[in-house]
Length: 257
Image (cartoon, rainbow, N blue to C red):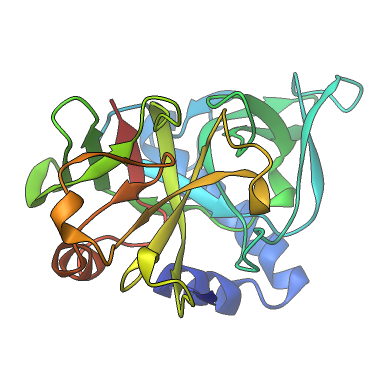
């Protein structure tokens, strides 16, 4: 399969191609994101600032710029929860959802949602381990019970489709996740026209290539949709995923209920 970086990935690469510029931008972008909460320009930003909330319209994320240990607390001596790399198993830039920014002892930390099991695990990383904040107001909402998906932009529904979800023995996991890459060029027609990779992982297929990440992809068997037909991935008819491809950016939030 051939990874295709999204526009946000390309923008982030251009913006952070020079390491010194990246660090300078990180210092500039952070106060900009907290200016309204801080009460205006010239005031000290708050020690803690919430960057994203589950289910809300605004969602922030960032590309991982160096390998880093995610810790249980914003402290370099805290236990390591997981390790983040700069590339996904598919070879695309790694990205993480941002939840909270906290200043501790003159150093900035970010609480991020990690692409590890169990799903929903979070950890703290230094602010300088990631690039500038990216923002999106696009969210894909998947309902496993009704086998439907809808895409919201700024709270307004712009896309709906029937879907296939995981079989009972290979369930699609629920929770809050993110679209982290777009993939094409499959040798297996079962994946259809294209696929999106998410930060969700299967708890039952952990030995799969790449660690069993949940994808959203097309299919060469549209007659199976809707239904509980997959190994955990979310399937759409090819005509629907092509429509979704025109509307959903890398970094979009994914809520699976």
